[in-house]
Amino acid sequence: MIKEENKAMESGKKRKGEVYKAENSKTEIHSGNYWARKQILLFKSPDKWTKSQKIRAELLFKQFEDIKHVYYYSLELGKIFSTNYDKDVARAKLALWYNKIEEYGYDTFTTVANSIENHYERILNFFVNRSTNAAAEAFNAKIKAFRASFRGVVDMRFFLFRLAKVYA
Image 1 (cartoon, rainbow, N blue to C red):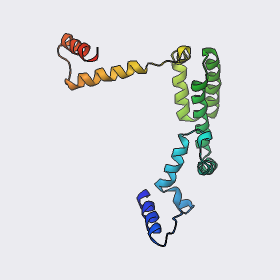
Image 2 (image 1 turned 60 degrees about the vertical axis):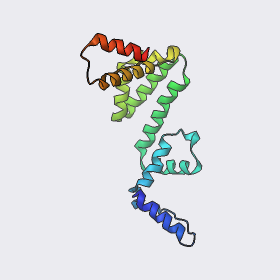
Image 3 (image 1 turned 180 degrees about the vertical axis):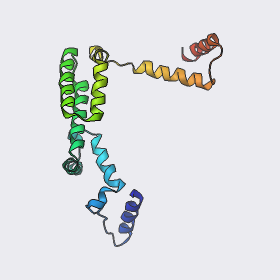
Image 4 (image 1 turned 45 degrees about the vertical axis):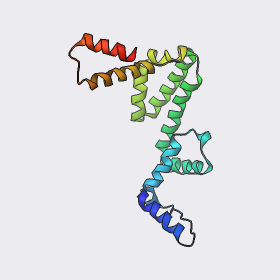
């Protein structure tokens, strides 16, 4: 559908310098371009939206109320992690967010909220010195890739020796 719309835009440019304007109807909702433009604004915070994205967001949220709620709940969760530097404050804000999610009852966010509840203390440890285990995870991925390049490990001592030589 995006290809068809791009062709229409090109043919409009070739004829007398006409500017192609997509029709704003129910059929446009099924085009890939419509959803691609809507999706882009959902990955930004509202203060970074352009004027046209604000209009698109207003239309999208008017049509799909669930998307609006989920979008703002996800922004709220991200804000907890980006602005709080105290473990106790973060604990209180996460608890309030969790209560809102339970009240809303959206399945996907309930899964996220349950994961947060199950790993609450480990998640809150992020707020102690704002560090994650990303370095350990990256090193683990390197070890797995190294092991895969040998198609398995037969001699563990030799594997550890090679690993130490390559990554030490």
